[in-house]
Length: 503
Image 1 (spheres, rainbow, N blue to C red):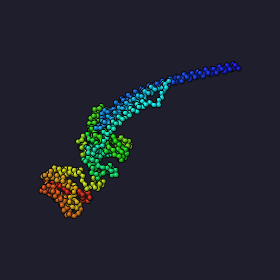
Image 2: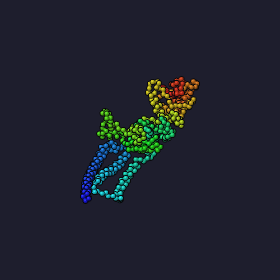
Image 3: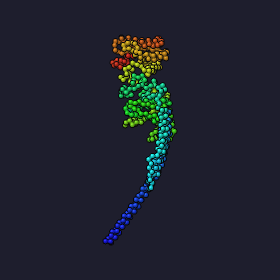
Image 4: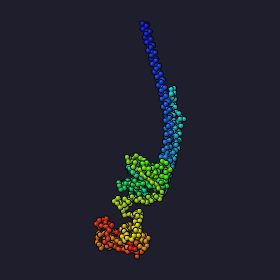
């Protein structure tokens, strides 16, 4: 029995020794794994520091490399008077946020390196540190206060509204999917009123009130026309939208404002560089001295093809890209010539049509009076200089009479006053005033009516101081039609008064 117990004790000792051996082996493996993990942590921490250095170098280098394509740097200086203040505000903001960016990146990766796992390190926990809280709240408060105050100063400088008595050009931009309608004031310098209830698609898409005298000379640019602006002029842009939210963005002038349906907005700016001047600035940079078309070495230089642009800075739909418009800034004289070449939308598209308000139909507007004067002057000058007998006959297109009578319509005085001026200009000119009618009615009555109408015109000119010896009158009734009397349009043409230059 003792032998058996001894044997059992030996077996137990062997088992214990084997277990101790296994525990020691496991302990050695565990210690090796900890060492491996320590080395891996060291490597990771080191690579994080390397990444931080490379990342910061990349950020700074890429900013320097691409600065000439960013607004406010290199060739892309502001083209408006207030743009320098906005660029300065952005630079100030970039300075402070740049410091915060660099410091936070350094601390983030440095802490990952410094506080990597090390055996024996024990974390220290603290619930409150007044000094630390003062630092990380006080410094941001001071910096943000400085930035906000500077931003408010710039905002108040660039966003005041204008005194109606001050000198400025106001234009209106109306956004819709997917284009802009631009409206310019005519000679009166004022935009007419609008009312959405007056919108007629294809005819009056802006809802302009044609009974407002200020609307009569307004000019509306279509979606493809260049937007032309005068340099060194205060410009107020009135911004509206017909459907969804758009944004009127002129990046080179540092202006940007939402176009909100039902809520008109505006901004004010003063362009200080013409398109040609901006191109000249670009031409001094090597990256702009390359062909505008990479596939055509003979194409114009890139700087020669530059244009200011209007962009919609809202994702307003799938056709958003098509809202881009070209803006051309020119000298004041060139702008005036461009504006003079544009026709009033009302006079070109609405006047005399079914869409012309009833109260406007018996009126003559200054633009119409001026145009009629130019037209008559051109006709008379052509007749005086021509040797062709047919050219010596000038129709007085805007002389009208009461139906069936020889009394002059009040609107005729403008044409006859212009004729008086031309008779005084050509003091030796002798003329015959010839009256004509259509074929409706009795022949003798038509002959008498045409004769009386011609005499009425003669009497008007004599009353205006034209020597009667230079004038004669005659009525031809329906005997000399120039169009068919079978149609209303033809009869209207045949009812006319002519001026025949005799010598």
